[in-house]
Length: 283
Image 1 (cartoon, rainbow, N blue to C red):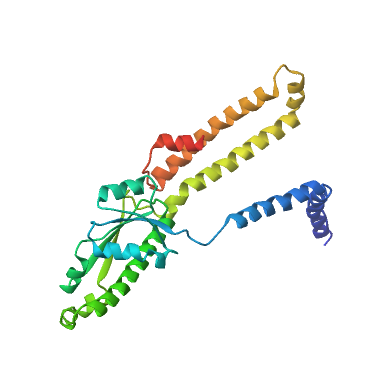
Image 2: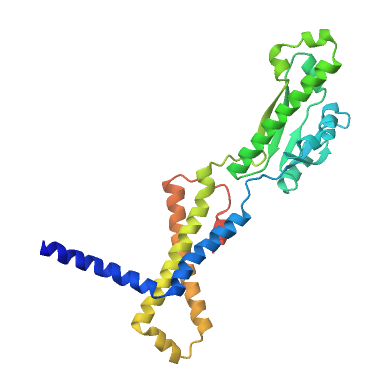
């Protein structure tokens, strides 16, 4: 029993020591609490769960009635769509997407109503140029919602303007869903969420490792008395900081290369960009 009591005393002595040392430094306690709180506060102030309307370019001919009808009713879907312009060139629409002047491109086929009255579905083509899988999924959702809205408006148009004979010639499948859609990526790259987040995780790990190594270096030099030698040496503080920065930048690049190689070759992480761009981000 005495041995157990001695063990507990030795165990709790370090606990008391560390707690007292922290509590004796109110500025440190305030920093530990206030720092994370301010970070969370800034994150909360900047966070919003509302998506901005998708900037949209429509590809259609000048006499395309469906495109004209869509443009005239864009205010009804202003929470989803922000209409940019209409062009008759698919290549121009793709240029809009690649220059980030638009988020979504829609190709509307000609003679859509005639195709539906011939008992055939009309296919809308939606294009995007996002690599973020979450944003790509949202644009796919917008495409689906917009197609449903067009289907509803088409049903109203058919029931209001078409004669009974032309409507009865349409099959129930086409009548209930006159339009379907296909969703394309201009980049031609499909990125999984884990692949998209992996580079950010590597950079975060690298940042923490370099911060830890730099802190350990400062503590080691203080205990060894090197800091006092620096004070009496002809070295300037800027020279010391610059040399340490270059040293840990070099070590960071080596660690980053090792982590990237392990991720690429060991885990099969896809590489769709340029390795020089990756090196620039690490630096």
